[in-house]
Amino acid sequence: MKLSRLVTREIFHRKMNFFLTLAGVSLAVTCVLATLAAMRSYDLNSDKIIAKMEADTQAQMKKLEDDIRKTMKGLGFNIYIFPKDQDMSEVYDQGYASKTMPEEYATTLANSKIVTVNHLLPSLTQKLEWPEKKRTVILIGVRGEVPLAHRDPKSPLIDPVKKGELVIGYELHRSLEIKAGDEVTFKGKKFKVGKTHPERGTKDDITIWMNLTECQELLGKIGRINAIQALECNCATLDRLGEIRAELMQILPDTQITETGSTALARAESRNKAKETAKKQIAAAKANRVQMSKEREKFAGILLPIVLLFAMVWIAMLALMNVRERVTEIGVLRAIGVSAGIILSAFLSRAVLAGLLGAIAGVVDFALIYPFVKERFFQGVAMSEVVSGSEWIVALLAAPILAAVSAWLPSLMAAQKDPADVLRHD
Image 1 (cartoon, helix red, strand yellow):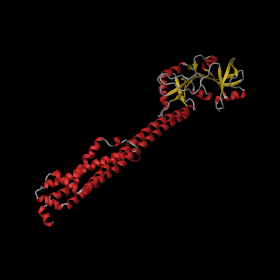
Image 2 (cartoon, helix red, strand yellow; image 1 turned 135 degrees about the vertical axis):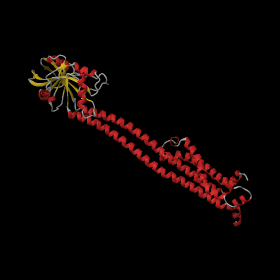
Image 3 (cartoon, one colour; image 1 turned 90 degrees about the vertical axis):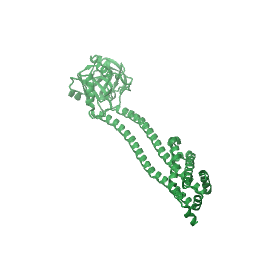
Image 4 (tube, one colour; image 1 turned 30 degrees about the horizontal axis):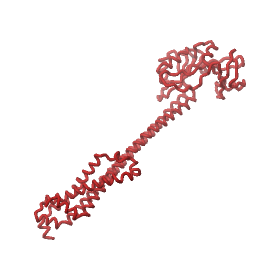
């Protein structure tokens, strides 16, 4: 009797048993593919979420840094460059330097490749008498900020004073009843009041700001300044001032540098804290993703072996039931000359065929069901991204092999039946 004919008759004679074997394989294949797809879809989706979070965080960080930078600008300049021979106790006492240095120092600094400071503002400051009003004032000559040649232009911290105009502090314009747009005379020269400041509660309230060139002419100090003000760039090191001094002293050795510590510290700490917070958020999200992925892998490592073991036991039990139900038939076949090898091959072939058809059914079931459940269970990820072509092939090849292994012992038992013993009892 041919093997193919024997297998065909076996299947059609035990349709339910064959169908249950096929259904067990199909369910196992579907479950394995679904588990792999769930893990892959979670990883892909979490990767996208983290990538989006990083992009959003970087955008938020840039905005936050811009906001902090704008806020910190309100604290004013925090780096001051004075002439080298200036007595700093005099500066601390009267609020400005009596020594002067060339205005070109600001240009020299701007044309260098400095990285620790920006917003360079040369100025000339002196306390003097406003003879026309008989008031002691602080006169500050300023020009527009000197742009750094190697950087993009930045919005200035203060607006330059136009020629022919003055900016008046609160106490002066309040007590002298001066308003913006008025014309005043200062040391014999007429000026228009371009702006008046609100109360600040500092020496600014008795200060007059003037265009630097006109101030130099009025004080007889053409081309001279007594300070360069600057804004410190964000520096995360503890010795910020040391770094700034080391860089600036190489460019302007005939100067000395001071820093208003509290302002600089607030600026640096605010920016660095914002950066650190963003980094911690991203790191926490990545750590959570890794932890969740490990937990899912652990769960899959338990579930998949259980599913495969259950399927193999199911196939083995059905094969054993089939053998027991066909003891008499097996005895007759052996008695008429069918070899044990043919009997073994018939039962194994039946198992392999059930495994192959079950794998095909499982693959088809998964492919048909996936579009309807991908949003709910698979994060909306496309099926091609969670199951590769090679994995489809592995599923189709592995299922028949596992089915044959599961049916091996029951098939071997059937092949080893002694026909004389079987027929004597039946």
